[in-house]
Length: 326
Ligand code: R5P
Image 1 (tube, rainbow, N blue to C red):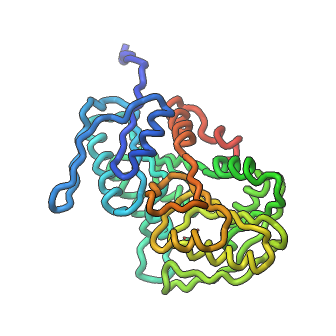
Image 2: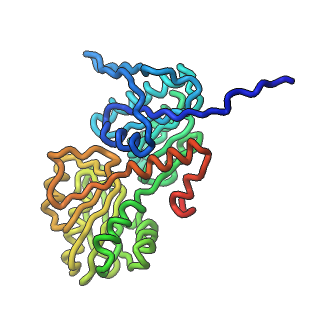
Image 3: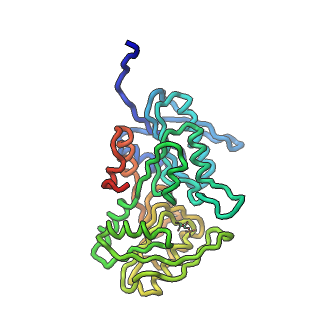
């Protein structure tokens, strides 16, 4: 006999970076595990040190970190955690980045520019990541940047359930804030019960980051409850402009639903005064109290991430979480 059978036991361990412990704790609770104890410190010169306080030999490791500011520090911390796991003989390492950092730098617009989203994937591969789990990538093709499995989760189910419960009886039009997201708006419109769609014709100057011009609505907004959908809201310029043109086009009301609340200044000011009835996010990124306002709702993405972790751990199907449409 040339082989010897081992213990058929598999162990799942959850590891959390320091950026968004609230989400990590929620995921742990859904999974009925505790976050693996660790030491994590930042030295006076900015270097980060991590050490896990339990053996990780042979485990199925899931390492969660939300990439909010200071993004580069949290990326580095997660890389260091992956490196520590690899060197301590974890069997498989899944990097969970609910918001994929640098996802908007996914192609060169002009010569001599980086493709930073690819660099992120390469760095995690080199550190030792076997797979990546993420939510609502800015563009789906980023999956191909990582040489390994990428579990791409959709927050659409979480957001659509909420919209259906709170606005399902209203004449909804699903609005894409730009022409690039029309296909996605169609999917949302279908989930919400075959609603009509519209999109905002928007122009952007590549030399002026974070500035967009909302021009006009293509589709029917008059007397409709317009639901603007987007993957992220950063400074709020895109959405505030879209709300304005929708209102000028006769929308009865506007609700905004976005997966990632990046919320760089002056997003809170813009969103709270743009005239939208409600702005809905998930908690893929932490949203501190000072960035919240009465019309903002934050839904938890933790149950979805936990279900996906279970499927990966049990060699099940992540696609099944999305009715086979992932
Ligand atoms: C654009 O392609 C993205 O989907 C978002 O609409 C954009 O990044 C949001 O940025 P801001 O809130 O700064 O307009």
